[in-house]
Length: 260
Length: 147
Image 1 (cartoon, rainbow over the protein chains, first blue to last red):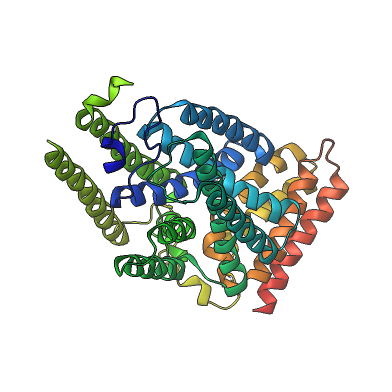
Image 2 (image 1 turned 180 degrees about the vertical axis):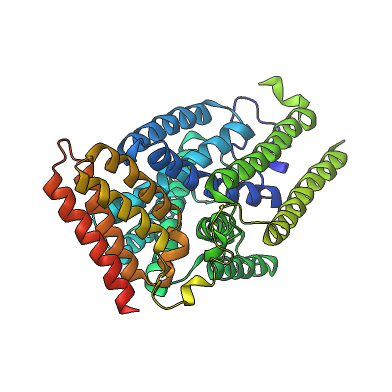
């Protein structure tokens, strides 16, 4: 909260949320909702990949331009953008894999290099990768490019784990969960906070997908058999609840910020 | 005020986590909701005759059979409608089936894609649809014999 209570008239306030438990719960669940939501539109509604892609891309453009025009972190716009980026990031990987038949080894490597390049340029120009000071348009654009890339990388790496290692969702939850726990421990032991954040951001993509599959898949496949629709509805309600809490919290705890 | 608010937010977060944990636990003992006939679908994979490396594929094969029969009758419109059930069922089971045998999953997935493409062509032609369905059914049998 420090970044937000600092008074900066004429300058943007930090545009992105503080990283809390609630942040990660929303982030993980938005992965599931993003994936099942896009599948639902493409297959069940029958729009096909083409129309679904176009619609989601249009929505993302609208959400992102709204997000870029705000002067400070606004929970519902921020999280709407994340959910849509999650879908688009997933679709980019799916398009490369299914449409262009690019090997998952290749796409995982490409996204990893692209993400490294984004961080390199970001750090080179801004001299920081801090996510507590996303206070300029340029920094925010770096932030969202990195986010898009982590979702594409997380999708490719997660699919690669299934394809190459035959890693099912049950073990996926365990392994990706353990890796996240490891990152958490390293961070608590005074590891690099920004690096820990972005590694966790990548890992929570396949973790969220595996968790979603675990709840969605039929019991004969070892899932909880809740089905994609109910799982999405449940996760979406949790997201709405937490984002609403954050939105209301913004109003009550920072009344002085309407000055600018 | 600030502290009170933080507490409230933590409370919401924790209760959501508990709710989800409880839900995951409960739904394990609840019925699977899929309305499957037969008492124990999980065990059928072990029976001879129905098993493949991907497990029991009879529900998918049954739909493919229906589609094939409709194609033989020349009712391509009805076949196109029915094959969507296969697409939806196959798609939603991907996360469960694929890790069991990635190669077999891709073989079957491609055969299903071919059948979908034939039936969804601008001007579907019975001979193409017939060939695609025959190929698909043949793949189902090949996977079963392989196991």
